[in-house]
Image 1 (cartoon, rainbow, N blue to C red):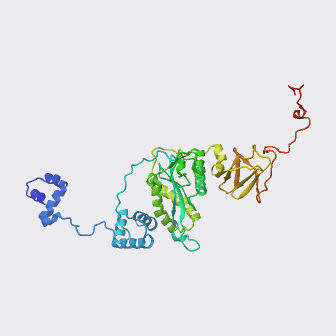
Image 2: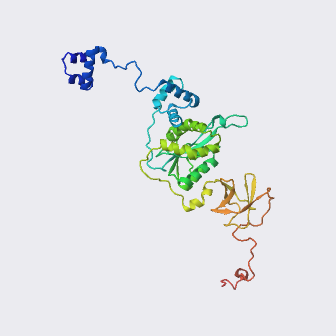
Image 3: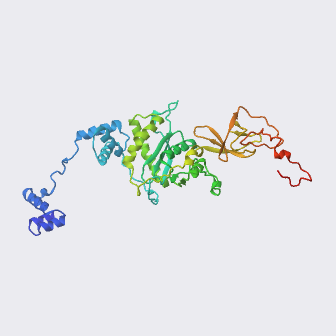
Length: 420
């Protein structure tokens, strides 16, 4: 106000007044002319207290809020803004939606709590260098999936996210986070993408033996650790949820967005959900949220010929059992009788690997050879053996012919050095 008075009185130039007020000379000239015409009130903007020229009509605001109340009442403002544009052709900024929802009590602005300081880890450089993996139990299908007593059922979502790009590389609804479902997940992943260089996961019992003895005994490992060691993929276990924050934040986002997307698409079962994830949600999510890696290219390792051949052996649940004197093996309340002819020599009291494949079939392996067997209907009777027997690649009833050199040989004083 004082500067304009000085400028009007001619005590300072328009240029000096413009510099002091950080305005253009033309603005100073226009404002001086307005003050001379209407007085000092000319300094106040003409639209003060009036609706803005670009203000969204009140009818549009009310119509938008009615849609939000009807269909998106539990949506976050950002997600609601996307759905208004996608399904209703209403284009708003996220801040406008947030302000409107806050005014109507549909959204409460949250203040961030002060958290513990944690150092930032840069992303890996290439796609396939590190996959963050975890499982999340949640009411993914809300009250649309219920048990016999009409109680909502929690479902487990297994998901992996690439550290370099933020892409969801695979996500599947499963019954649990057990060995069988995790093996199925990674077998399908590796057949589709190849072997990642590393997997970042938590210390859940499926992935790591947490017994104190495992600290000093590196031979103690889970089925999952053994399979990944066979394939040459490094496993990194996190000491806190924040350490693998990318997959933790992914589940926070999915528990908000995926649940509501499936509600809008009327997805009611895990089977429908898996198709929806693969065909619609994951491509759409990756297109919106993925980032460019620091280095181009895919560093997944392809399966070797031997690894492809043995993939079912690798992703099997393996336990060792002793071979009895009568060449039977007891395993899970069943008795397995080994056949007489085997691809390798089998001796009593050796320990064979009992492999349960993902298709639930049983395979007995000894020295990388799969043994032939039959399942006995009941426990066999115990027998006494005068001499130990072995199973070989030929029949045990083989007898040497009478003209065999071994039968012609005789021990005697005159035949110290026999010749054949």
